[in-house]
Image (cartoon, rainbow, N blue to C red):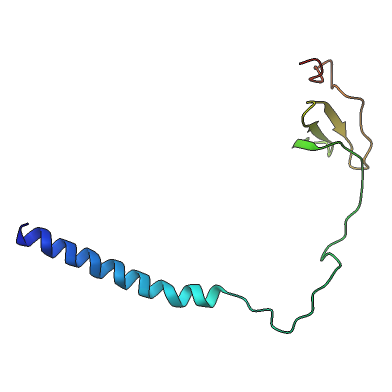
Length: 100
């Protein structure tokens, strides 16, 4: 092993050591201790059911406020309005994925 190679190895080891020592305080500060904070059963937001779907899979939002939803594993495609009104499976003559 040449002197240059040994020096590079030592410098690399030194750099990695310095980096890892610098990250230890950052990791410790990132931890949050809830302490005596009581757990809460309620959700921090309001959930409003707008429609019923059987395992929704993909959603695409349309410019007019409606959205397209596919269900897994049937592949059925629906148009759903913002008020939750759901179309019949299949949109505009497209296949619903049944019979595959």
